[in-house]
Image (cartoon, rainbow, N blue to C red):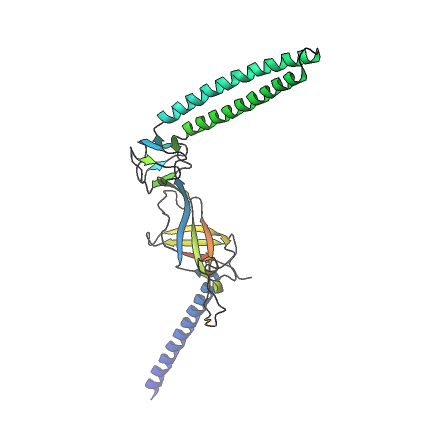
Length: 290
C-alpha cells in the first residue's frame, strides 16, 4: 500500500511543480505583454520626391537609370535649351532697347527741369517730358522682368536631384515631349525613413514619445532594427479616412479603433540602406507603466 501512495505523492508533487512553473510563465507573459506592445499592422514610410519639369520641351538627355543612387544637385534630365536660349537673346535685345530709351528720357527730363525752372519750357511740355520718362522707365522694368523670366526658364532646362536618394518610377526617355508638371520619376531618400504602426487604442495607455522600439522586418527574419517612438497621431485612422464612419444611423457596432504611431529608426541601425518604403514590419514598443 505504501508504494502506490508514494507514486501518487510524486505525481502530485510533479503536478504542483508544473502548476507553479506554468503560473510563473503566465505571470511573466502578462508582465511582458504590459511592457512590450506589439502590432503587425505596420509598414515603412518615407519621403518620396516627385520629379517634374517646370517648363515644356523636348528631352535632350536622361542622365539616370531606375534604382540608381544619386546625390543632391546631380543632373537628372536635360531639356533641349535651344528655344529658351533664343528667348533669352530676344528678351536681352528688348531690354537693351528699353534701357536706351529710358536713358534718353532721363536726359530729356533733366534738361526739361532746368529749362522749366528758367521758364523757357512751358508747363505742359515739361509734364509731357516727365510722363515720357515714367513710361520708358516702366517699359524698361517690364523688359528686365521678362529677361529674368527667360533666363530662369533657361535654367529650368536642367532638372536636378532635390536630395540624396535612389531613382524610382522613371518614365522619361530621350526625345520625349514634356509638359510642365508632368511626372518623370521619383527620388527616395532611404536615410530618412520611418515606421507607421497602427496600434489598437487599448494598447496605447503607456506609450509615449521617446520610448525604445525593436522592429522586425518580414524581409529579414531573425534580424532586429532599433528605433524610438516619435509621435502619436492626433486621431484614429478611421477619422481621417475618405469616408469616415457615421455612427448616428442606428446600426452602431463598437469596433476597437487603431491609432497610427510614428516610429523613427536609430541613425546607425540601417547603415547599408537595405530597408525599402512599403515593407511590412512588426514593431514592439518597450513601454513602462506609470
